[in-house]
Amino acid sequence: ISFVSIVVLCIILLGGCASEPNQEVNIIPQPQQVTVADGGFYLSPKTVINVVKGADDLQPACTFMSTLVEKSFGKALTVANGETKKNAINIFVDPSMKADAYDLTVEKNAVNMKGGSSKAVFYAMQSLRQMMPVGVEKGEKMDRIRIQNVQIQDEPRLGYRGTMLDVCRHFFTVDEVKTFIDMLALHKLSVFHWHLTDDQGWRIEIKKYPELTQIGSQRKQTVIGKNTGKYDGTPYGPYFFTQEEIKEVIQYAADRYITIIPEIELPGHALAALATYPELGCTGGPYEVCQMWGVFPEVFCPGNEKTFEFWEGVLDEVAELFPGEIIHIGGDECPRDAWKKCKKCQARMKQEKMKDEGELQNYTVHRIEAYLKEKGKRILGWDEILEGDVSKTAIVMSWRGKTGGIKGAKRGNEVVMVPNDYAYFDYYQSKDVDKEPFSIGGFVDVAKVYSLNPTEGLTAEEGKKIIGVQANLWAEYITTFSHAQYMLLPRMAALAEVAWTPQEAREYSNFLNRAKLLTQRYEALGYNFAKHILQESK
Ligand code: TNX
Image 1 (tube, rainbow, N blue to C red):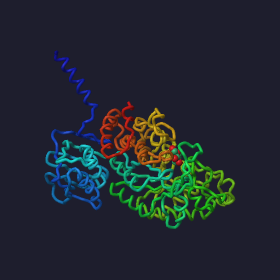
Image 2: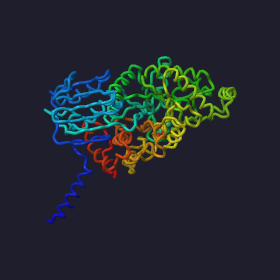
Image 3: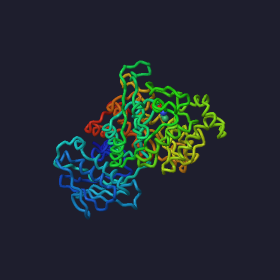
Image 4: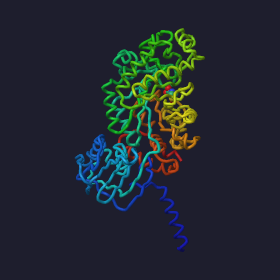
């Protein structure tokens, strides 16, 4: 064998290896800098979680770490305070670093993690977790766990990394919502957008309006599959979250450094509320909690002061309940025909000198925004809010492609990109639709999700207005949580990398290899996922 052929062989071998993921350091989303070193650290039941420099809200992160290996070791790791030491996970919160940035070093004698905040330390822990054998996720018995020596420096591209769950069209229980939050945490996502009201169900208890969840949380019949108009005859509901349950979910999310953004839809998607209080619609009803999917002409009446009183009463409780700054007020898909025929709406328009019903919608959004501003809250709305002269402080959620987001960013609004053609997880993820569970339509495979560049089409300055990306899981055709997981995974992994990893550091084939390994973790965790999808994707 000649020298040249050996060199060629080496190049081929190395080239082949380069695209193979490192089995030990396989992290999604891909961290900004990873330097693998020789050797490894042995985590054992004697390893201490050692807080060298803490912060007020660090405790949930420590609890996460200490209990992660509890089942495998038969004991939780001890959490202590002290100087840097050996056989420890030494933790430093260093406020001089960027809030979401972390450094993680694994060495023979210790693991050191340093983060700009407790949240960043939690992200370091998720990276460490993904370097552990998947057996820890199901409590496989182990004496010790080898972790590859490595140095990681990391921070997310975008601060808002979200997923929306629709609990209106179909309901998911508190435990299922918690599992959903666990899934967000594994992927280092930071926002849970909770879609709580819609035509087909009002799912949040409001103490001032108890009838909302007595009447608005149930449908007379359950629609079968497609919009065939056929029903299986069984009622659906009552299904809703009490305020106590919501507090429990908020705490669960906070313990994973995840913010919940509640959504209260107005002035459209209102039938569950109108069925409860028909006087809030333009015709006075009667209305029914909707049994079919779509966009319906019966919407709230913004000509009526009582409607504003109602919204304010609801938002008072929502603002009190959810500690986050942002409240989603919907704003999408609101046909205005009823307003044209409504005396009260027309009177309000005349009084306020409005040209058309679009201005009435705009007036509504402005009034609600001003109301919430007084409570220290900011509004987020679907991109229809841009149709009027929405204020610059509103955040725009771009769902009809990226167009609304680009427009919003250019006019100076902050934007969350949720383009349906990249980030709608209710769409089919395979072209072979006959083999897939029946879905609303569309096609967004994992490659398409991955190809999203949220700041494309914007200058660097305008790009700063893109504060985040999100995926939406609408649940018209998703009746079980296991099906929800199937739609979310592995696409959520692609979304997480879009949101976290700088554009220039992303490479699809490399992602695909890591994603295949991540699915082993899904399996160990008992998450349902679309198993064939990564095999199909090129
Ligand atoms: C559009 S996205 C909707 C939802 C549907 C979804 C189905 C948006 C703001 N509105 O009401 O569930 O399409 O994909």
